[in-house]
Image (cartoon, rainbow, N blue to C red; front, side):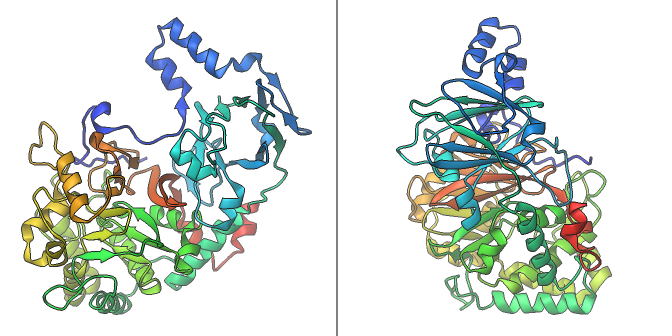
Length: 518
């Protein structure tokens, strides 16, 4: 597996940078951290129980937990487990893949609300080997993801995954959780994802391959025409759509971070959840936070074909969904000699690749596209930009007329969070001031990309100790992250990257679902 070699990783301590978001406690990590503390391990067992002493059940018939633990071997829950929590139904289903997953252990489960899952964009909690989950209403995001209410017990049940068995424990007063097997994939997860993959195939007009130069230039010019008259962007003093996009509050956001030429990551996201369906219905908008180009993987930083391909795909998506796809400008959306990684001048190489593959007219059209891109997306409960809030005082008029303020452009596309070795970075006060400028409340989320905090993860919440300040970076492997909204609550979702290019490009030759089934 190729590793991310970006020098832009923020190497602060865990306490400074906030670890990647997880709803589960890793038992193995906790043991490793405190292996010599017997008292700690005893306390751990008192909460989690000892799997070896639990009653083993086969789920041949429903089983009711009553303040006890029970374990089920993975072979007895091949399709998953239904949990009846006093009338509230949850499903624990195996994570499924259409393409070859990157780094998957093959035994992860997703806990979800089946009713929400069927009806629209919804959340889930992943439980991988070594994880222990406590489910209940005390977690705000679990309430949104799993449909818990104020009447739901603060701690309802727990699930531990030790690799060979799942251990369930009832934690609430009253009737215990009833476990029963899921006989078949009643949620039709695989079929839905295949249908989404077919829709992407249709949107692109065939296999996801580099377009012929004349067709690519035609697409680019059509997108330029769209950007010159976008209705959701207040006009600047030139009469052109300005640097700010205002999205309606009712529009569900799908916030995608830097993709850095990972075409499979974008395809994976487009096939997951109800993202594509909601976009087609006009209920959701995908916001890509710039930097779709220039791979950051070792051995691939000079390669530009995947950058061309991902831009072909994004431009086709924009043409298909003019008001449901917005691409925010990032620092890599440039041909500048300053843009590069590990000494590789990616900006200059990008310009050369466009000229060589598609001619000078295409390169100049891409220049024009970059000039027309917005810099900030704003809704009633969140804002998003590529890199950072401004450090100084700004107003809405400056954001709309950002073309007049090159220093402001540099800040929102290039700056990073302040650190001892980066005193010019932005601070908690800058985030607070930016929210005030945008007339957002203190609980409104500010999403940025640009600076991943580790080399293999994707989502980080409350970064730098700043509440509702989140980083999303979607160009790493194996994890791809998005932020979205369920019942008005912003939630982070992590997906495994899958090798989907070869799958989608075979769709005109086979019945894909039958092929996957066999």
